[in-house]
Image (cartoon, rainbow, N blue to C red; front, side, top):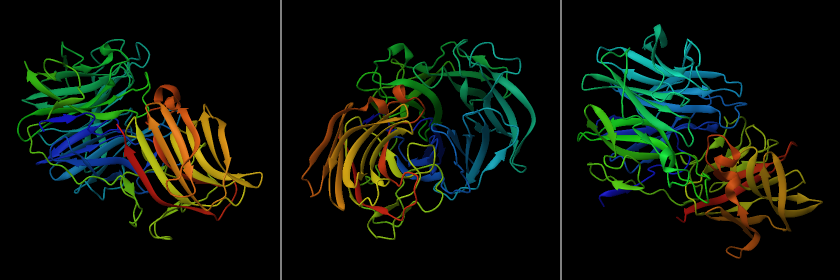
Length: 521
């Protein structure tokens, strides 16, 4: 096949950054409040990717305690220089706007990565690193212009030298550019490159939603002045309308292959069931050429297409990831995440071999805490999930089951619990912080099969006491509450296993024998 399909990373993988080391490509994305942080992927052909781990996989690297939903780790950049990999990112600490930039290093991209090197006096978000020919290293990010903002969310890109021995910024901050599109807000996501003797600065403008875009400027000197490309934005989909198959396109990084081709990775969303993006912002790939020393993205079309011609690289497929995780390993596979940094013992893969054991703990998934939750990204508009759980609620406060999660205020929970001394399975829909019970059915069992099927924005929930003998819990639940357009924030929908004693102490556990996720579209 000489074509590939976009997105190259489906599901909530936003803000992609890419680098090449020899014949290998590496890519990272944002991870927000989820742990481990910053998933890292490897490819040899730019199309087929496999996850090789997370950059921030130790509590010593990432303290997400009390981090609100859609805060945390923003917009990482990955670079490779002289045998060392660098990942730099912003930790958005709180709702009040506290931001801290740091970088980590590794000689093997699969890890281990160093503990954070925090950069003092480094305002802004979306940091990037640029290694110049003269040995100097530069940090770029955005900030409020020193002369003040001329309009709402008016930002500028600035540069400062980074001393790798001191691991701190040194010298003056230099204003580079405040964007090509005046009154189009949120200049961010800067990446600097030196190509054919010129410095090129690619940024994002217009916010991360519908008006998102990619713009570019260039200079003969790294400190400017920067000449604005007259064909800006070089990539956007906002002119296609909100019913386009791909929207929210922006936040780009570029790479040249060993065969001389140029490619761009960026984020975008695939709405379905109307203007609703349950999958969040995903990673897309698009080619570009140079014309009059400026990029022309997807010549003749200027947009990202769902099906495009493959890069001129040898096809390299990886072994497929099993649709069903039987939890036979002593470690969670890379697809799984927790919410915030784990504190205390949340789960075990060894206490009952072949099972994922979730501890029934007081923390609840409706608060911004670290609940007993193990989840993975929704990656398809149509999908089916099934699991079997060994659990019996010993009190009204105890519950366990499946949750479809957008954030702490927008979710759908299918849980086994007690009500008035009777064990029941129930479906709860949480909208804007308020739970509503949609179905309650009395069930007496210690082994419960659970299934969710989604077709577009119609979600269906089933349970069984015996294998494949399914009973309807509730059908045709409106899934649009799991979209960012309804729930807000920056993350896509997750689905996973969950247990809680809802504020009380408990020694109970919920054992999951397997978890199967199958894309149906």
